[in-house]
Image (cartoon, rainbow, N blue to C red; front, side, top):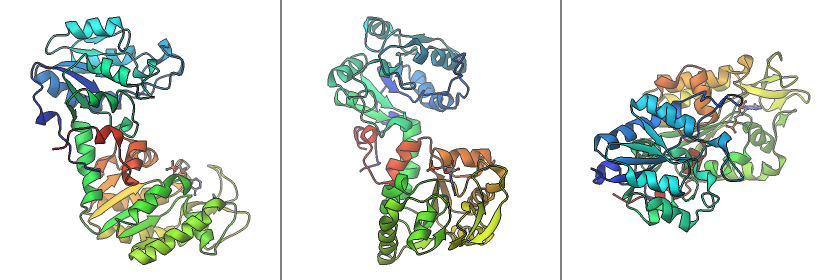
Length: 397
Ligand code: AMP
């Protein structure tokens, strides 16, 4: 898949109507509906401000949550319009529907330099089905389509991909940056490329491991997913997370690493506990010999040294998934130490979205990484080498 896509700077948007797909899927207080974290709205500002600066008329759209039965005020984007208006210092005209009479009339009347927001795209059942009729109606409001919702590009929906059949389609600054950094690191990495994988399950990262074995020089496996590898090597893992159905797969991956000459590093020591609890007393054991009544919760000091050493001389490090149960302070050191190692290396350091991004932020290392991806699912798709429909539909440079 080509990551070399036209951006909003490669097309003329002056005075034009622009349909802009954003990721305004913000967390809200269940009772009051108040936005509890506006990071995603703030992240969309550079592209919006650029478009308004070009005197474009911006028709923004996004999904919010998962409304199942059509329009539902609980999932209205009205609070986002209000917050976006405060951040921009100008009115954001809120439409009452997505492609209904209100949206159509407001879009038709929209003037250069003005911005409006369509209602939640998932109020239309055709959105998740990528219905061409819905896509055509959305596209009919504008002359150019700009996609800046990286968190949604792995979905082929009407507003994330379908509209590109009807309009010249380019990326906004957020997607451009993701493609430049993540896409660049995968397509043409500064070597050695070290991938650090962690998190709970092997099964959720199968595609990632398989794809990275074709690209990386070193793969480090930590977190709960390491124990299925340990078991596959003949170790005992006690009550640790284990996916017995994936033992053969782990063996296959170890064989592939050997064949491809990729260094595969696994934990050598483990902090374990008698139960899955924040108060559990950490006990240090050899990873290959975890006692029957103990579960692995974090990597130990020898493993920290081994993994940190592998990061030191890397050209690029891609990290996805915590090294242990970092939510419990007693088992956060492994993840913290790896974050520190990334902060200290001269390598390009890229953190995949989701839990790893949360861990890096919670442990205070966010500003010391080269880049933190904004899309959990989408960045996993990239690491798996899968085509992203919301990127594939954009014009090539
Ligand atoms: P994922 O969403 O697959 O990246 O998994 C992230 C979750 O994995 C975090 O909530 C961690 O607490 C959890 N995790 C990491 N290591 C372990 C472990 N050794 N045992 C259980 N859970 C773990």
